[in-house]
Image (cartoon, rainbow, N blue to C red; front, side, top):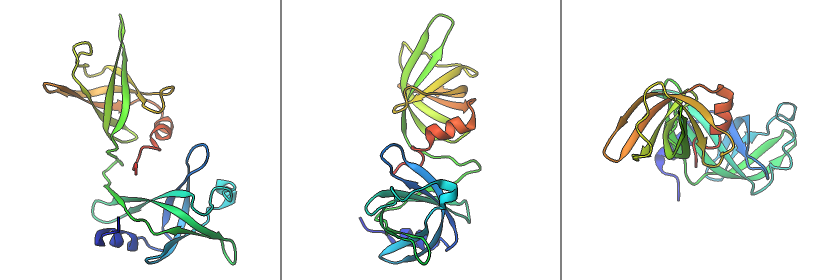
Amino acid sequence: MSLNSADIHSLQSLMPGSVVDLQISTPTAPKRVKTGYIGGDFPHCLLFQVPAESRWGYLGDVLVPDNEVVIRYVLEGGEGKVIAFRSKVIKVIKHPVAILFVQLPTMLQTLALRKHKRWTPGIQAQINTVGEKDTLSSGCMIVDVSLQGCRCVLESRDDFPLLDNGKTIHLSLASETDQNIKGIIKNSRSTEDKAFYGVQFTANEEVVKKLLDRFIIDL
């Protein structure tokens, strides 16, 4: 897939000196750091500062040719939007200055910003409630999420009645079954076959961010 004119404009709108979020694939878990954009040699490559070792640690073993990276940045103006794309490392040079070369992406993802950043990632999850007599559990889909809360939808079931506002729930993400996010039902509605909930997170924001990081702008 090749970039369309809007994608090219979004790339060219990234100004040299802008700070970007650089996510680097590692053998264990992705590592996310901040670095600066230097410029682009269209249609060949994009150039970034090598993240400072004093702040982010040694990255020489993961910033290697063909290793995958995800780059995210915010374009201001209007409502603002987040641009994200996958790429691969071409090479790193250390002299006269340390520069990271990455491939020009073949596809961009664009998401609008709101007052609080929100994303629509479609995260598979499990919703759990603890009652006076029993514990209820059901699979659900998180369809809109921010650090403050989320919207989730699940299939209507006779053994999982509609939850009341103010009910405490726990959400466990599909790939993080040993960890969960605590929240409170703030609003709910149902159709013939689905139930929709607005949830306000009550867990520490850092805990929420850590669990959601890998899903936000999921490419």
